[in-house]
Image: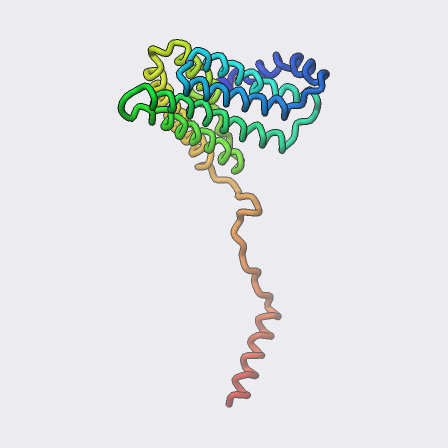
Length: 229
């Protein structure tokens, strides 16, 4: 939802900040790695039971996540390598943060409620995979009610008001599953429209034999038959 409606506006607003950071000599990769470090600290503090401190680190994790792209655009260093690093770091930071929540619940709550963040992470990975696979096939899978930015915001809210954390996690799981269904339906509709496959995926056909080639093969078979007689 955020990615589809406000991403362009936010990117424009971050452009001056990206230009200022570029002048300091900080690269986009360094900012991305800083975000991973912040996510690690968030996971540790949440798992240790300091939920409001974890809230602070989650906010700090979101800052590099928003600025690395702005710095790359300002410095003209946007590349496939940088996009790959950014995508991998997103999945890693998600795993760290939800892992910290699972650790906290396993240490402080009875039963199997610690599996709730694991279920959210699994649904989130499915949402992310659907977009990556769809784009590799030439389809658009953006959108949905609970994308990564929304998960950040909702999780931060649950940590800030930790008395309702479990309820917030249940809501997040339901909305993430709905997002997965929304993306599947969106791509399914696009894929249902007939269109030519890329050349690399088109089935190969054996070339038809020419008339002269067929006549030559027929004569060779006749000669072999006479020799056998």
